[in-house]
Amino acid sequence: MKAPTLAYVVDANVLIQAQKGYYGFSICPGFWECLLRQHQDGRVISIDKVRDEIEDGSELDQWVKNSVPGTFFVSTQDQAIVTAYGNLVQWVQAQSQFTAAAKAEFSQVADGWLIACTMCRKDHLVVTHEQFNPDIKRKVPIPNVCRQFGVPYLDTFEMLKDLGVRLVLAD
Image: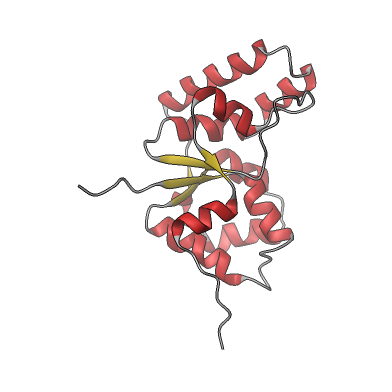
């Protein structure tokens, strides 16, 4: 029996940090081509709320508009995702660890939606650069919520390794 194929749900910070730094469009076009190929193979997606966060006229925004198929950013309007998101927000609001500002921010950004979408998709993992921090108060880190709800997560480099991606300099 064939092992299930994992798929990766990408956080905005993965795209933003890559574009601004180590995988900039002009120095590493292979990273961006890889994302598109992996999406075509059903292995990499993101959500509409992440799309909203990167819609700012930047080079990343232009890449999305010009190169990324609409299927890359899946809708979060599915009832199962909405219900899961509500459960996540309810849990975050009940945590005395986080400041009121951190709780409010969590309710306004894509993070909870990203986790909820992943919860509702079998064999999917969250991809984020955020780190688990059991003591943080000023932010609700994605990994903290993922751990609470049993949602697997990893960073960009782990995703690329899992996918068997090799970014090789061409002659």
